[in-house]
Image (cartoon, rainbow over all chains, first blue to last red; front, top):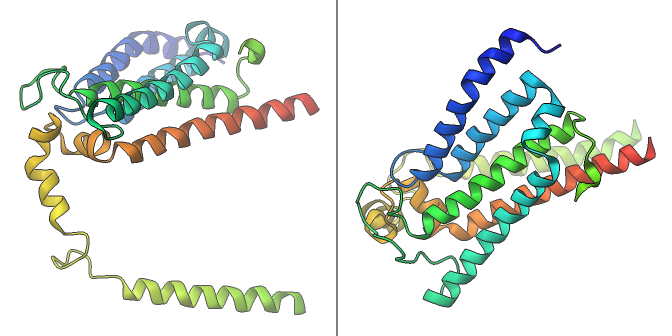
Amino acid sequence: MYDPILQVIASILVPYIHLFGIFLVLYGHQSPGGGFAGGAIIAAGFLLMRLAFGSERASGVMPHHLCLRLESGGGLVFIFIGLLGLVVANRILANMDVTVLGMEVSALSGGFVLALGIAVAFKVTSTMFSLFQRLSGGSDDVECY
Amino acid sequence: MRRLIFPLVLLLLLGGVFVQTVAELPDFGDPDNPAHNYVKARYLELGPEETGSPNAVTAILFDYRAYDTFGEVTVLFTAVTAVILALRLTRKEG
């Protein structure tokens, strides 16, 4: 079932897919990309790993309880940043000048945009991976959370 | 045969309403469309300075319309919760 050619290609490709996804997340406010696209690409790397090596190996890297933690963690960070905006700028989810706002090309130039992007990326990654694992009848460590 | 009459009439009525609605839509690409108001110009002109994000899509997603993105996050959470709940239930029964 698990093709050795696919395994070799996947083990070469997966780190670059993850690197590209992380780049898209971190520079989503400077160039095309963003939390949703970057998170989906990181999840695609995990899915390739799961398809090439099987459910158990993939669960070793990304176990179900970790998926659920990242899932709720991403949502909670989003809510926390929203409430922080409410406290600081009297407006929910307000952008704050924590870093240099403006046209400067840097990963740290977007203020809260970057933090929200990272939270959404975690959420999209864990959502896609855990949905795939659940729907494909994957790992049975359901009792872990 | 009789059972089919009511759904058929309902479908025809609803279909007529939908077709009429589509016929009333503004022309595609018309500059006088309601969507082409001051909001678009504001996002494109002041977006980079106001949000620190030269990428207009990200500026709208995570700053101007961040509350809608919060709704999307909720949708993802609900989807995962529903799938896990449904698949757990079938597993216990089977």
